[in-house]
Image 1 (cartoon, one colour):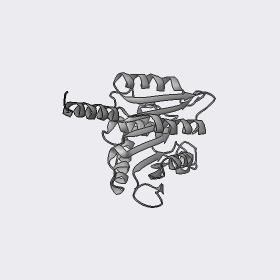
Image 2 (image 1 turned 30 degrees about the vertical axis):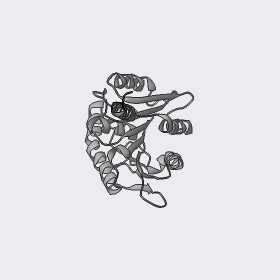
Image 3 (image 1 turned 90 degrees about the horizontal axis):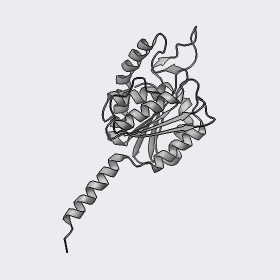
Length: 233
């Protein structure tokens, strides 16, 4: 497995797994503020802060940090490299879920920038990978073709993000909603391209309050079954 920082509950088996993916040119430590917020809210969760697959290549002569795929070259090359990185991420997520004996619906992906782009694309390509995704300062590399089944998608973005401006993300979110996706999109003012504390707090609020459609469906079905079995007077 790729390098990772792992935080586990102090005792007992974890009941949730969050896999966190940093941005290009950074490392796993970039996701520490998100990991700490998740740990406060979910002390029984396992947190895996992954390190990018490759050394960062955008600085001549080499530079610190890692990337999930190279962004050098034209749009077609970048898209091909993104798609090629998805199977490696899928294998990592499935490997950790199996190691911790957690079914896919109890797994969540959290990514910033390039990490968010990769997480969103993985859920477009692979069914039953994770039940939720938190995408900070990210984007859809391709126009969404379908709504991931039984997956809650939370998009969190700065209104002042000049690197990945938010309008394209909102257009993709609207398309996903039209396709039946379980999705929220928050664009906060006075926030740029960063894993800002206000975005993290908004993500925690979404995790606390947003009820996935799958759970609503299960509740409705359970209520209907109960109503069917109750005696009529």
